Length: 276
Ligand SMILES: N[C@@H](CCC(=O)N[C@@H](CS)C(=O)NCC(=O)O)C(=O)O
Image (cartoon, rainbow, N blue to C red; front, side):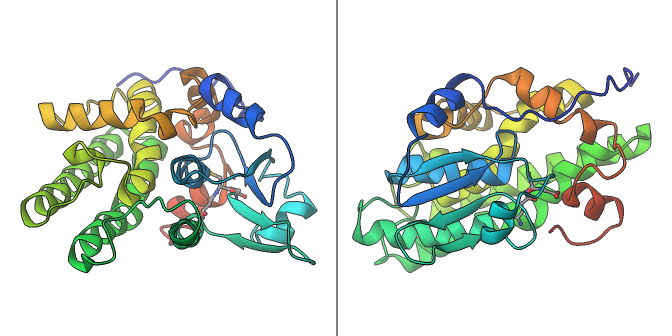
Protein backbone atom coordinates (compact mmCIF):
# COMPACT_ATOMS: atom_id res chain seq x y z
CA UNK A 1 0.00 0.00 0.00
CA UNK A 2 1.53 3.38 -0.93
CA UNK A 3 1.84 5.76 1.99
CA UNK A 4 1.19 9.44 1.62
CA UNK A 5 3.69 11.59 3.47
CA UNK A 6 3.15 12.72 7.04
CA UNK A 7 1.77 16.24 6.75
CA UNK A 8 2.55 17.00 10.40
CA UNK A 9 -1.03 17.61 11.53
CA UNK A 10 -1.60 17.84 15.26
CA UNK A 11 -4.44 16.62 17.46
CA UNK A 12 -7.44 18.89 17.84
CA UNK A 13 -8.23 20.82 21.02
CA UNK A 14 -11.89 21.53 20.35
CA UNK A 15 -14.81 19.26 19.43
CA UNK A 16 -16.62 19.67 16.13
CA UNK A 17 -20.05 18.62 14.83
CA UNK A 18 -22.48 16.90 17.21
CA UNK A 19 -19.86 16.67 19.96
CA UNK A 20 -19.35 20.45 19.85
CA UNK A 21 -23.08 21.04 20.36
CA UNK A 22 -23.03 18.63 23.32
CA UNK A 23 -19.90 20.25 24.79
CA UNK A 24 -21.50 23.70 24.47
CA UNK A 25 -24.71 22.48 26.11
CA UNK A 26 -22.59 21.17 29.01
CA UNK A 27 -20.19 24.08 29.47
CA UNK A 28 -21.73 25.32 32.73
CA UNK A 29 -20.73 24.32 36.27
CA UNK A 30 -22.12 21.06 37.58
CA UNK A 31 -21.50 18.62 40.44
CA UNK A 32 -19.57 16.40 38.01
CA UNK A 33 -16.83 17.71 35.73
CA UNK A 34 -15.65 15.45 32.90
CA UNK A 35 -12.04 16.24 31.98
CA UNK A 36 -12.00 15.27 28.33
CA UNK A 37 -10.19 15.57 25.02
CA UNK A 38 -12.19 15.70 21.83
CA UNK A 39 -10.25 12.99 19.96
CA UNK A 40 -9.88 10.53 22.84
CA UNK A 41 -11.74 7.20 22.62
CA UNK A 42 -11.32 6.50 26.36
CA UNK A 43 -13.10 9.81 27.02
CA UNK A 44 -15.80 8.96 24.51
CA UNK A 45 -16.65 5.84 26.53
CA UNK A 46 -17.41 7.91 29.61
CA UNK A 47 -19.02 10.76 27.69
CA UNK A 48 -21.47 8.45 25.88
CA UNK A 49 -22.29 6.76 29.21
CA UNK A 50 -23.00 10.12 30.88
CA UNK A 51 -25.29 11.00 28.00
CA UNK A 52 -27.07 7.66 27.97
CA UNK A 53 -27.42 7.36 31.73
CA UNK A 54 -28.78 10.90 31.90
CA UNK A 55 -26.49 12.65 34.38
CA UNK A 56 -25.81 16.35 34.70
CA UNK A 57 -22.17 17.11 34.07
CA UNK A 58 -19.78 19.75 32.81
CA UNK A 59 -17.61 18.88 29.80
CA UNK A 60 -14.19 20.44 30.24
CA UNK A 61 -11.67 20.15 27.40
CA UNK A 62 -8.03 19.68 28.39
CA UNK A 63 -4.79 18.90 26.54
CA UNK A 64 -3.63 15.67 28.23
CA UNK A 65 -0.16 15.92 26.68
CA UNK A 66 0.42 19.27 28.42
CA UNK A 67 -0.62 17.77 31.77
CA UNK A 68 -2.20 20.85 33.37
CA UNK A 69 -2.11 20.68 37.23
CA UNK A 70 -5.93 20.52 37.45
CA UNK A 71 -5.87 17.34 35.34
CA UNK A 72 -3.09 15.80 37.46
CA UNK A 73 -5.25 16.44 40.53
CA UNK A 74 -8.00 14.19 39.16
CA UNK A 75 -5.89 11.74 37.17
CA UNK A 76 -2.43 10.96 38.61
CA UNK A 77 -0.87 9.88 35.27
CA UNK A 78 -2.34 12.93 33.55
CA UNK A 79 -4.55 10.79 31.34
CA UNK A 80 -8.07 11.69 30.25
CA UNK A 81 -10.83 10.92 31.10
CA UNK A 82 -11.05 12.14 34.68
CA UNK A 83 -14.15 12.94 36.71
CA UNK A 84 -14.13 15.57 39.45
CA UNK A 85 -16.93 15.66 41.99
CA UNK A 86 -17.36 19.28 42.93
CA UNK A 87 -19.86 18.94 45.75
CA UNK A 88 -17.35 17.58 48.27
CA UNK A 89 -14.71 19.71 49.93
CA UNK A 90 -12.01 19.05 48.93
CA UNK A 91 -13.39 17.72 45.64
CA UNK A 92 -13.15 13.98 45.08
CA UNK A 93 -12.09 12.52 41.75
CA UNK A 94 -11.87 9.34 39.69
CA UNK A 95 -9.78 8.35 36.70
CA UNK A 96 -9.59 5.25 34.43
CA UNK A 97 -12.43 4.96 31.94
CA UNK A 98 -13.46 1.45 33.02
CA UNK A 99 -13.60 2.43 36.69
CA UNK A 100 -15.57 5.57 35.86
CA UNK A 101 -18.05 3.47 33.86
CA UNK A 102 -18.54 1.15 36.84
CA UNK A 103 -19.08 4.17 39.09
CA UNK A 104 -21.63 5.75 36.73
CA UNK A 105 -23.50 2.47 36.41
CA UNK A 106 -23.77 2.18 40.22
CA UNK A 107 -24.65 5.86 40.64
CA UNK A 108 -27.45 5.52 38.09
CA UNK A 109 -29.07 2.67 40.01
CA UNK A 110 -30.20 5.09 42.71
CA UNK A 111 -30.49 8.31 40.68
CA UNK A 112 -31.46 8.25 37.00
CA UNK A 113 -32.48 4.54 37.17
CA UNK A 114 -30.89 3.88 33.81
CA UNK A 115 -28.39 1.11 33.13
CA UNK A 116 -25.86 -0.17 30.60
CA UNK A 117 -26.34 -3.75 31.82
CA UNK A 118 -29.06 -6.41 32.00
CA UNK A 119 -30.92 -6.36 35.36
CA UNK A 120 -29.05 -7.42 38.50
CA UNK A 121 -31.52 -10.31 38.79
CA UNK A 122 -29.83 -11.84 35.72
CA UNK A 123 -26.17 -12.12 36.76
CA UNK A 124 -25.31 -14.48 33.90
CA UNK A 125 -26.56 -12.04 31.26
CA UNK A 126 -24.54 -9.31 32.97
CA UNK A 127 -21.46 -11.54 33.03
CA UNK A 128 -21.72 -12.13 29.28
CA UNK A 129 -21.67 -8.36 28.75
CA UNK A 130 -18.59 -8.18 31.02
CA UNK A 131 -16.94 -10.82 28.82
CA UNK A 132 -17.54 -8.62 25.77
CA UNK A 133 -16.13 -5.58 27.58
CA UNK A 134 -13.10 -7.60 28.72
CA UNK A 135 -12.43 -8.68 25.14
CA UNK A 136 -12.50 -5.04 24.07
CA UNK A 137 -9.91 -4.07 26.71
CA UNK A 138 -7.51 -6.94 26.20
CA UNK A 139 -7.84 -7.55 22.47
CA UNK A 140 -9.63 -4.91 20.39
CA UNK A 141 -7.98 -1.79 21.81
CA UNK A 142 -4.34 -2.95 21.59
CA UNK A 143 -5.00 -4.48 18.15
CA UNK A 144 -6.32 -1.12 16.91
CA UNK A 145 -3.12 0.72 17.87
CA UNK A 146 -0.77 -2.04 16.66
CA UNK A 147 -2.47 -1.88 13.27
CA UNK A 148 -2.54 1.90 13.04
CA UNK A 149 1.07 2.34 14.20
CA UNK A 150 2.47 -0.41 11.94
CA UNK A 151 4.73 1.13 9.28
CA UNK A 152 5.99 -1.85 7.23
CA UNK A 153 3.58 -3.41 4.76
CA UNK A 154 3.88 -6.89 6.26
CA UNK A 155 3.23 -5.53 9.73
CA UNK A 156 0.19 -3.65 8.41
CA UNK A 157 -1.19 -6.82 6.83
CA UNK A 158 -0.62 -8.62 10.12
CA UNK A 159 -2.28 -5.71 11.96
CA UNK A 160 -5.33 -5.84 9.72
CA UNK A 161 -5.65 -9.57 10.37
CA UNK A 162 -5.30 -9.17 14.11
CA UNK A 163 -7.83 -6.34 14.28
CA UNK A 164 -10.32 -8.18 12.06
CA UNK A 165 -9.96 -11.35 14.14
CA UNK A 166 -10.59 -9.30 17.26
CA UNK A 167 -13.77 -7.79 15.79
CA UNK A 168 -14.88 -11.30 14.85
CA UNK A 169 -14.15 -12.44 18.39
CA UNK A 170 -16.40 -9.69 19.69
CA UNK A 171 -19.16 -10.74 17.30
CA UNK A 172 -18.86 -14.32 18.61
CA UNK A 173 -19.36 -13.05 22.14
CA UNK A 174 -22.38 -10.98 21.04
CA UNK A 175 -23.86 -14.08 19.36
CA UNK A 176 -23.23 -16.21 22.40
CA UNK A 177 -25.11 -13.73 24.62
CA UNK A 178 -27.91 -13.57 22.07
CA UNK A 179 -28.26 -17.37 22.06
CA UNK A 180 -27.96 -17.92 25.78
CA UNK A 181 -29.78 -14.98 27.37
CA UNK A 182 -32.74 -12.70 26.91
CA UNK A 183 -32.35 -8.98 27.46
CA UNK A 184 -33.14 -5.76 25.65
CA UNK A 185 -29.67 -4.44 26.46
CA UNK A 186 -27.07 -4.19 23.69
CA UNK A 187 -27.04 -2.65 20.23
CA UNK A 188 -26.05 -5.99 18.67
CA UNK A 189 -29.48 -7.38 19.42
CA UNK A 190 -31.25 -4.17 18.46
CA UNK A 191 -31.62 -3.08 22.07
CA UNK A 192 -30.27 -0.19 24.09
CA UNK A 193 -26.64 0.89 24.48
CA UNK A 194 -24.68 -1.59 26.61
CA UNK A 195 -21.47 -1.45 28.61
CA UNK A 196 -19.76 -3.39 25.78
CA UNK A 197 -21.05 -0.88 23.22
CA UNK A 198 -19.59 2.10 25.06
CA UNK A 199 -16.38 0.17 25.79
CA UNK A 200 -15.67 -0.78 22.18
CA UNK A 201 -17.74 1.71 20.19
CA UNK A 202 -15.12 4.48 20.13
CA UNK A 203 -12.56 2.20 18.39
CA UNK A 204 -15.09 0.64 16.04
CA UNK A 205 -16.13 4.16 15.07
CA UNK A 206 -12.47 5.15 14.55
CA UNK A 207 -12.01 2.01 12.44
CA UNK A 208 -14.66 3.41 10.06
CA UNK A 209 -12.78 6.67 9.58
CA UNK A 210 -9.14 6.56 10.78
CA UNK A 211 -8.33 2.93 9.82
CA UNK A 212 -10.21 3.21 6.52
CA UNK A 213 -8.35 6.40 5.64
CA UNK A 214 -4.81 5.53 6.75
CA UNK A 215 -4.80 1.76 6.25
CA UNK A 216 -7.47 1.12 3.62
CA UNK A 217 -9.15 -1.08 6.22
CA UNK A 218 -12.13 -3.12 5.03
CA UNK A 219 -14.62 -3.83 7.80
CA UNK A 220 -15.72 -7.45 8.24
CA UNK A 221 -18.35 -8.64 5.79
CA UNK A 222 -21.80 -9.53 7.00
CA UNK A 223 -25.10 -7.74 7.15
CA UNK A 224 -25.43 -8.14 10.91
CA UNK A 225 -22.07 -6.57 11.56
CA UNK A 226 -22.85 -3.70 9.19
CA UNK A 227 -26.19 -3.16 10.88
CA UNK A 228 -24.46 -3.15 14.28
CA UNK A 229 -22.00 -0.47 13.20
CA UNK A 230 -24.88 1.54 11.74
CA UNK A 231 -26.83 1.32 15.00
CA UNK A 232 -23.73 2.32 16.94
CA UNK A 233 -22.91 5.45 14.94
CA UNK A 234 -26.56 6.52 14.88
CA UNK A 235 -27.30 5.76 18.52
CA UNK A 236 -28.45 9.14 19.93
CA UNK A 237 -26.23 9.13 23.04
CA UNK A 238 -23.15 7.87 21.16
CA UNK A 239 -23.71 10.25 18.26
CA UNK A 240 -23.86 13.25 20.59
CA UNK A 241 -20.22 12.54 21.47
CA UNK A 242 -18.96 12.27 17.87
CA UNK A 243 -16.99 14.98 16.15
CA UNK A 244 -16.67 15.23 12.38
CA UNK A 245 -14.40 12.89 10.42
CA UNK A 246 -11.73 15.52 9.75
CA UNK A 247 -11.05 15.89 13.49
CA UNK A 248 -10.23 12.19 13.81
CA UNK A 249 -8.17 12.00 10.62
CA UNK A 250 -6.03 14.94 11.68
CA UNK A 251 -5.77 13.92 15.31
CA UNK A 252 -4.62 10.39 14.42
CA UNK A 253 -2.06 11.26 11.76
CA UNK A 254 0.66 11.11 14.45
CA UNK A 255 -0.32 7.48 15.22
CA UNK A 256 -0.56 6.55 11.54
CA UNK A 257 3.05 7.65 10.97
CA UNK A 258 4.12 6.41 14.39
CA UNK A 259 5.75 9.72 15.26
CA UNK A 260 8.09 9.41 18.27
CA UNK A 261 6.48 10.12 21.65
CA UNK A 262 2.98 10.42 20.25
CA UNK A 263 1.41 9.33 23.55
CA UNK A 264 1.76 6.95 26.48
CA UNK A 265 -0.47 4.49 24.60
CA UNK A 266 1.67 4.70 21.44
CA UNK A 267 4.88 4.25 23.46
CA UNK A 268 3.46 1.20 25.22
CA UNK A 269 2.51 -0.37 21.87
CA UNK A 270 5.97 0.34 20.42
CA UNK A 271 7.72 -1.25 23.39
CA UNK A 272 5.33 -4.20 23.71
CA UNK A 273 4.20 -3.13 27.19
CA UNK A 274 0.71 -3.06 28.68
CA UNK A 275 -1.37 0.02 27.85
CA UNK A 276 -1.41 2.79 30.48
N1 LIG B 1 -6.34 3.55 30.85
C1 LIG B 1 -6.76 4.88 30.59
C2 LIG B 1 -6.21 5.38 29.26
C3 LIG B 1 -6.54 6.82 28.94
C4 LIG B 1 -5.63 7.42 27.87
O1 LIG B 1 -4.65 6.81 27.43
N2 LIG B 1 -5.94 8.67 27.44
C5 LIG B 1 -5.08 9.37 26.49
C6 LIG B 1 -5.84 10.18 25.45
S1 LIG B 1 -6.68 9.17 24.31
C7 LIG B 1 -4.21 10.38 27.25
O2 LIG B 1 -4.67 11.01 28.18
N3 LIG B 1 -2.94 10.51 26.85
C8 LIG B 1 -2.01 11.41 27.44
C9 LIG B 1 -0.59 10.92 27.31
O3 LIG B 1 -0.35 9.97 26.55
O4 LIG B 1 0.28 11.50 27.96
C10 LIG B 1 -8.29 4.92 30.63
O5 LIG B 1 -8.91 3.90 30.29
O6 LIG B 1 -8.87 5.95 31.04
